[in-house]
Image 1 (spheres, helix red, strand yellow):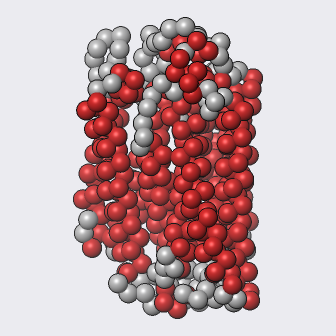
Image 2: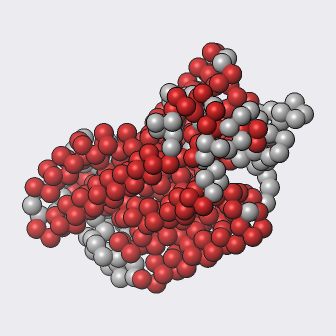
Image 3: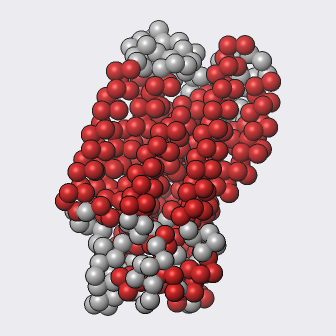
Length: 426
């Protein structure tokens, strides 16, 4: 590793070799193997829910990075130029995430109701507190044009192909510009950003509805896609801060980042904290105020044990999300000194990433019901497979990032805004 005194900001350090990437891949494969072994302990359905939780979490971070790249280009931002390259490395994980999603599809082919009961019209809704079968359910009948395996498969495949394509465009444009310095690559990225933002907004909303919201397909919410958008960006910003901390500690970003860069990404993190709270509160308040059973049941199963009438474990998880996802980050990021303190920002990024994961689990797992009709508890052995799945998928994502990182310049050295970014001030 080059020392901070000799590191060249424009060149990826030699230490970013295949060794750390290989270690990340090894950790990922171990996590995947342990998750697969969980089938023998807890059964395939519980492991499928764990795998889905991990996939939604890491796909969300990748989507958030893609969105931040496009937002950078569409606004012709200057401050984020030196940080954008790390997001370009991060989105290289999309093709691997698409590959890792395949086991969920295969599991649904083998046993249609493993996760998404709407795949199987013969599924007995008595297993989830209803009556009759899915095929006899009027709500499924009205939504069956969308809630079926073919539509699910087509929408998922189209979304992944689109995300992979967009990521490849932005990576090609940025990396090629390092060589020839042609401004046409910046203009091309701006054009693709204009189309890509619309495509990504629609597909992330569609996918989270099909993957997560439709686990309880009776439920109605107009805010769900926006909720996931907020999670995606918050997770990506947290990961961006952690990468900035890592590269600063190594010495690579010495002379590249200044306090204003830290302040700006901290400001964005603060803004999306408020945005997430607005979206989540609006969803809860509208459902509470309307008091329609088709909507309130989603929160009821996350607050009350139907068999006893007592608060269940998920209620306290919800309280953790309320205070940990909003109040703590709100006050933790509101001041200027907090935003420019690297150690504090590292802690806040880790905290936000952890709470985003818990929020995803809160949205996924309660759809898995026990024989009593109550959701499986939060604190149980099956959450161990969620942890191993997160480590497994995360190891593959880190491997993809490090592989890409080792092949390119640390920053886009011939981007037309690089000078302004290096001398950025508020």
